[in-house]
Image 1 (cartoon, rainbow, N blue to C red):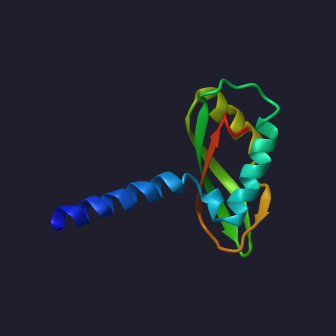
Image 2 (cartoon, rainbow, N blue to C red):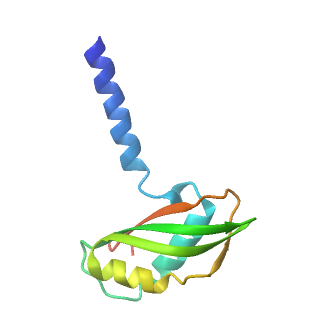
Length: 110
């Protein structure tokens, strides 16, 4: 019985981590940033297996947030272009203030 409970909890944990790849699934600001990023990345040419996981640090002032820093891991070319596209000091409206946002971009989804 104990083993069955442990296996079930591990399966739920893995299923949750696969389903939530980035904050754009449930955060309106992250969804807006990702939509703008994908629109501009679509114009560039990448290989079929490239991806980039971006971690954005935001400065929150009331209901607005500005991008302070962007850190990317994954394919070098895609992360480099993504960081160029994300302008620092661009203001975004936020309903829920968060300091960090995680965004996952794949070349398959472009």
